[in-house]
Image (cartoon, rainbow, N blue to C red; front, side):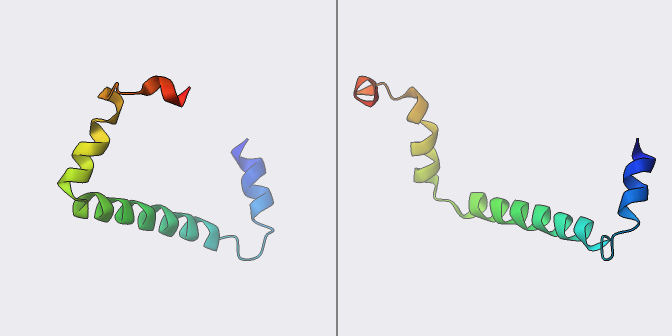
Amino acid sequence: MLKYVKQNLEHIDGVEIYPIISLLIFFIFFVGLFWWVYTAKKEHIIEVSNLPLDNQDNTELL
């Protein structure tokens, strides 16, 4: 199965840039996510973590 995909991809000019772009997108996303988590205020994290446990007025959402 892989030889059919590899054989088709060999005929596309510039195909070697796509894995590099994918790796850069993946890396930038997770570095940004790590930076956001690291710099987030503790009060915000506590507030968001308590949302599933907050039972006040849940019936209004339905």
